[in-house]
Length: 249
Image 1 (cartoon, helix red, strand yellow):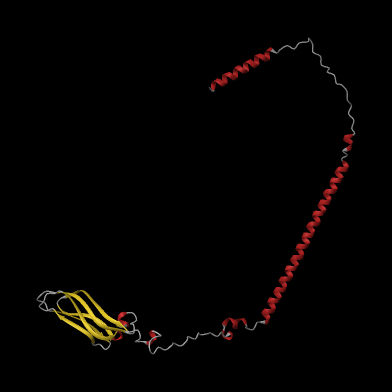
Image 2 (cartoon, helix red, strand yellow):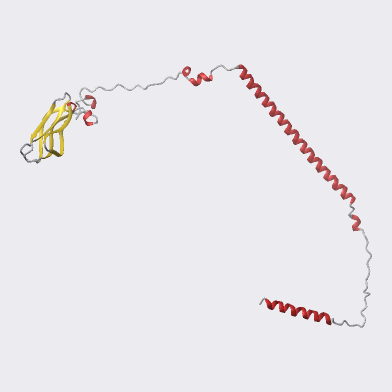
């Protein structure tokens, strides 16, 4: 019934005033059999204990009430159902009757006599000491002058290299622009020379002699006769084409 026995915190102010227990004794008539139900106190004795002797009796279901003087729950130890002889106990249960005194511990309620207001909780403020910070120590370590000078020289060399690279890019861009301008001027000059060499106006002033061109061919006999040999050849060609087409029908 106390905290170790219950597995949870026993409430201060809880008093036990009685116990109701029941079980079924299972045994043969001729067998000796006893059942003891009780609760130990914190010193190893018993706060209450009840024994039933079933020797020479038939086993039946038993239900009993055991009155107890109001006893604080903090004084109760382990409860048990112990047996001797030949037999078993089935369907056992133990119920405790209690009352609760909320002011047994005055701190349970501010209205209880003897209640003492608790002290205010003072927050814990952690003070930061920069001198104990490892990162601060590393940041404030002395710098190697040679290493610093070397890094500064490398930085200056890099800047000079980037500046030289920039001047070179500008010079190359200017050269490309000059070549482009020169090529454009050369093309314009070449076109001007070609235009000067080709005088298109001369084609507009050329004079072509005109007149009448009369036909000089004369047809003898005054009649064109059909070529019968050509007609027979065409007829044979048509016959041949018809024979070839018949092969695919």
